[in-house]
Image (cartoon, rainbow, N blue to C red; front, top):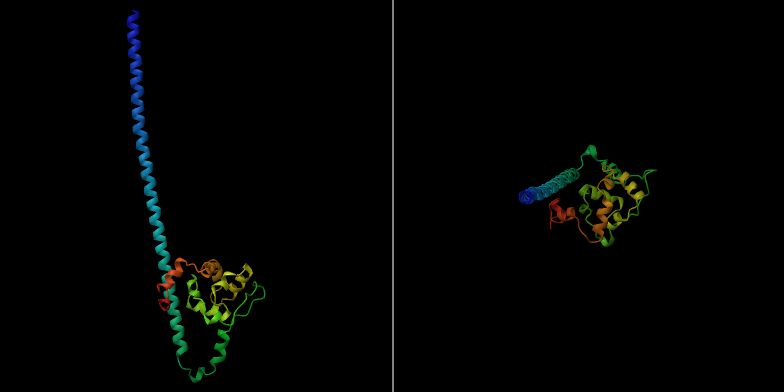
Length: 210
């Protein structure tokens, strides 16, 4: 009788061991498959994110190009109007034009006026159009206000930024909106931005093409 019991116990232990090994094998198959799926999903997400990032960059470049073209067209139309000869009816226009081209009067409660220059240092102004948000017309306005160089803009305080924002006739608020100061700091140090590279290559304004 005891001999039979020993045989049964041996069979039971064998079956338990076999079940345990089978369970380990099945678990390995399940967890191994899950890991592959997770790795695959992570790779797909990274690919999708990279694609979306490139699409956003392309969209920004297209918008910058459109802004540059529109500003160039506006500048061209402005120059065409100024080139027309004066008619008798508009003979008295120079006084009005002088008033329009003069710097905007400083507002009483709009920050502090930055230091200005009557002319660029050594007769060589910086190309302010390398600052994203400054087109040909806005560059001319900055020059009339006495701003010719990147380091001038780079050193503006918050109060000075507020003054310039308030005195950019037709472009109020552009300094803060486009973060001129941060861009000017890089350009004043001789570094470049993605936008300034495109300006130098003539991709934004035709007149700046080398």
